[in-house]
Image (cartoon, rainbow, N blue to C red; front, side, top):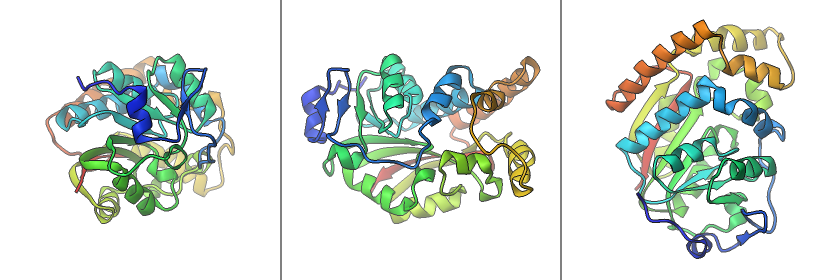
Length: 282
């Protein structure tokens, strides 16, 4: 288990932060980000019962076993703390960094011990101080992905690891991407190129959710191109996507176990609805 980070050491990394009476750290001001205000609330309603969030967590934690962090994992844009809770329960230290107030409150409810309401810029994070970074479905929200990844690179310690998930294939673009505030979807080669340009050495890269591209194409991407489908996010719609019926859940469980076993064996999948990458700061 990594040594615990005290409040003073967190301030050494991010001197703009102050501990609030509510129990979380905050910067004096919090910048806007490309994420819908209701997004964290909608996700919080389904995360604990969602096959998608559950499988993503298991895949992330598996690659963290294979490629361990050198210290505390800064979960940037960590939302409601669902991934952070998994990291914390696995025995690693985690610092959740989330600008959205709803997400921060939910993360505190989930028992995340170190929660920061800020962006990295607002927090004033110093260069060469962050041991490890998690960017779980964050980079696709950033217009200048290269600039963002390069800025993360400057903040990390030499040899520090970054763990990234992003949605795959621009051909699967749909109204859900627009509503979520996405700028793009990725392929592994495209993500590899931008990360290597920003100064990272790729250690592991794979697709996952290999069973999702066809359903997403049929039920999201094609209706979007035809101008069909909902123009707003709703809890009912999110639940229908994330909570399959018992028969569907049984099939998904078999597929997810098989996929996780391949990742645990350091085998890569050639296609999927998402990309998963581990890289080091050169």
